[in-house]
Amino acid sequence: MLKIRMQRTGRTNAPSFRIVVVEHTESPKTGNVVEKLGTYNPKTKERTLNGERIQYWLSVGAKASDTMHNMLISAGIIEGKKVNVLPQKSPPKKESEQKEPETKPASAEGFDEAKDEVPAPGLKDDVKPEVPEGDKGEEREKKEEKAA
Image (cartoon, rainbow, N blue to C red; front, side, top):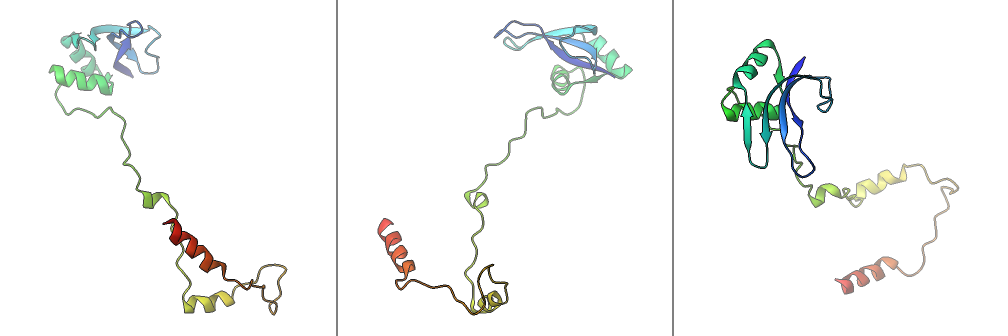
């Protein structure tokens, strides 16, 4: 399948392009062009297009690249709707989406269900883990209040 696309010919920091018809499998730099149809200078926005030959190649079955399609529409050679060639931006993620959801505290009903669970390996059912005398949870809450 033939494609109408741009082939870069300019130097570094001085771009200029040829508008060429090329086989779609060929790289734009190979130079195996079927026909040269015009030029485009993006710095001066100057473009020269051979409209008759472009119409011919499109009628034969050549497809224009997305950028060329938009250029041909703005030049008035073909009619249609322009194609978005810019990459899609993803919306920024909210902080709530990035964090993992917090677990809800166990209610009285959920506490009963927790007894049905299998105990950790190495612990027996009748042995309860020892809890230190001081409640460290209260100390932690006091530190958080002072920090805030």
